[in-house]
Length: 311
Image 1: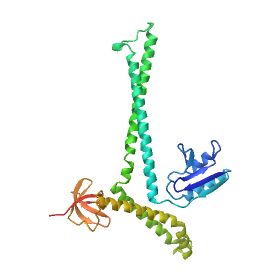
Image 2: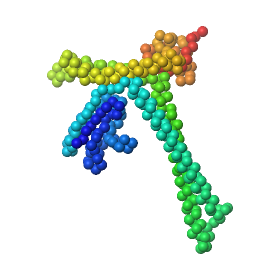
Image 3: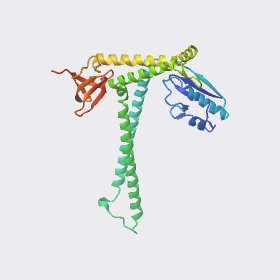
Image 4: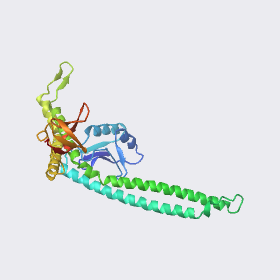
């Protein structure tokens, strides 16, 4: 008996599999991955999201076709975006600590490997004395050179591993800050808004009929779509509300500028990505600026760092 489960916090997972039972091939073919840290199969990018019913249905059918008995336990609820973000920040902090500890271990291994290589080199005859072929010291000399070469190679490899581990640890410390970068937050709000409008259009979208072509959806179809998409709509609106609150707090604190069409006028000079440009046109969501050539560039209002009115 296999059980496919989904919760918003844990994502989509499967219980009841065992090594060599034949489930691995089926799960791989339907997009699942094996998680070594959790010792379980899971659907990638399913955590903190509503269930991917098409993936679950396809997996269930494939497993049943292979002779397995499968049940499902699907929770269609979702946590608030605030809870989701708090969980991500906590997991990222744990990841930073783990990578920092790994970098420290790799650095210690690098130091130990270097000391071992240095000791092996010190055991060689001084001044690079050549091997005395036929002498009783030939074998010992060749072995010393081989050991020194192996030790030095391991030292170089340990140094490379330590460098990579430290780079990953350094990059991880900036992940949360990058996620909450003011421009990134503003762009995320725009993206979420577009996704919400797309979901809303799906409720009243026309249907295609083989004889009549595209026709308006019936009241029953609209009602069914509304019920089916309600969890997705609620989740998307909650995400937008959360990030809009983050954006408002950033503007209030001065971390974000908060310019828009009402505050930017033609002829203003704006600083975008470190360069000053003159405003040619204030659009609904972007500002058009001069480039010094015959064409103009556009940039989102969130990218404006400073604004200066003309004399």
